[in-house]
Image (tube, rainbow, N blue to C red; front, side, top):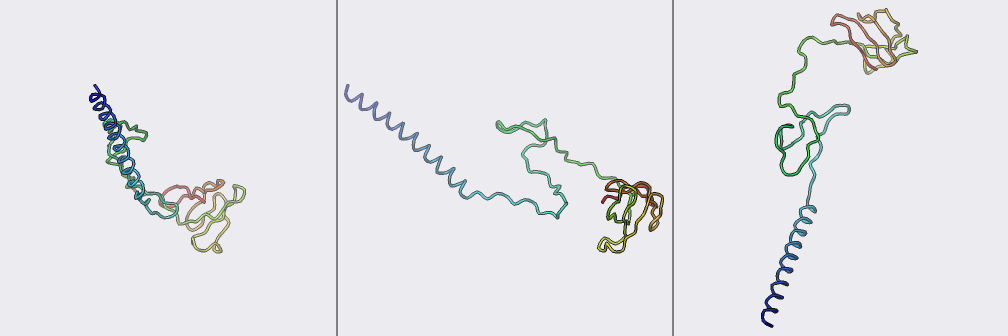
Length: 152
């Protein structure tokens, strides 16, 4: 009887030792992986520009099955994005430096020089472009490429 109790106690402590050792090895491995983790650097872009690189995911859209118990919060990513218009778009050579009370605008042609500017009102023509509307931080002009908006 005593030998049976000793055998059961030995198996009991051997099981506890094995489970404790497994937890220790798992914790040590997790700590080592976390210690040497290097996050990836973000994509360098110019100021005011955006990176259009798609995020790296292991699923393609809402209808695909997700691995494990992960949740999907993003929208469906199109593999073939719609190209931009290829026709002639509006282009203006005017640089808007400011507006005064929504009825006068300060415009120029050189983006590097704010001394070569002129005050214009609605209906006036400057550098071959007719001023249609003056807003609080934009003007609408008409030229040979069409009618469009020039922002501040």
